[in-house]
Image (cartoon, rainbow, N blue to C red; front, side, top):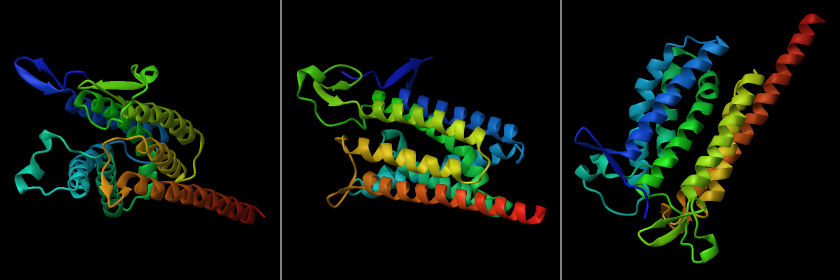
Length: 259
């Protein structure tokens, strides 16, 4: 059996998934604030503004994404019943990105200055959030029939049936991504590079892992998340190339001014 979905605290049943999501948001908040302070280009206090915009829009996006691609009819009350489960990470990313774009336009800030700082915190938050899937018994992989593969954490026993632990695979991949993005963020100054690497790195991992999922959302015969992952990979590669082109142009302009 999978782990318990809730724990009791002073008579209240607290969902592990909800707790881990809250931890992920708080940790991401402090990481973003710390990175803003380290770079010194933007006021760290804007982290509070971003949280107030990103948090609700990411929840709304995560819910709508799940509802739209779930393949069934929903009543209005069911759509609002977020506590009953049914949130999709990609929808949360889309909703949160919308919030960042809105904020960047209002404050007239280079959007990549924001997304480059948010990307490392985001992917670490995703790593923590996927652990919550273990407690909720969702986002698992295909059924495992080979007894040699029936061991945790490679596989998870869900109601007597073994499944690939795809949530752990994605969590581990996201932790690797966090390490990569932090290194790149600290060593490079060109806007967009960290953002592009996030999109391509996470998109690649999600595309591969989604192929092992047993509870994916579909649009026709295609897995929605795999289609979106491919889009992210190409967009990410484009942004990485574009950031290097801009860096090269900036160097060329500097040399012309010196000459």
